[in-house]
Image: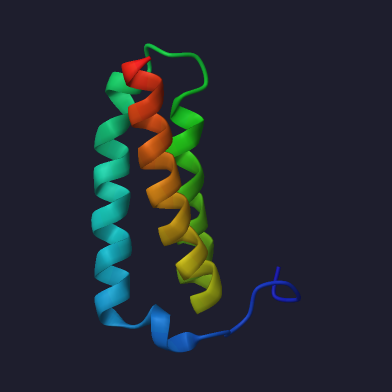
Length: 84
């Protein structure tokens, strides 16, 4: 894992971004129970949480930014699934 994920853009693994990752993970986790009704919908919100975890463990800021982007994408996807 260290070969692929390493200390890139370490400024994005500091305190304000860590708190933002925690808040985003909390919001995504709270969105999971209502999405259980739809098959495989919880996968949309689980993936960014996993990306946040790997980004925090490896202190990889590029992966942290990718996790924030995945959070926005999954929130849009979850709303789309719930409304159609």
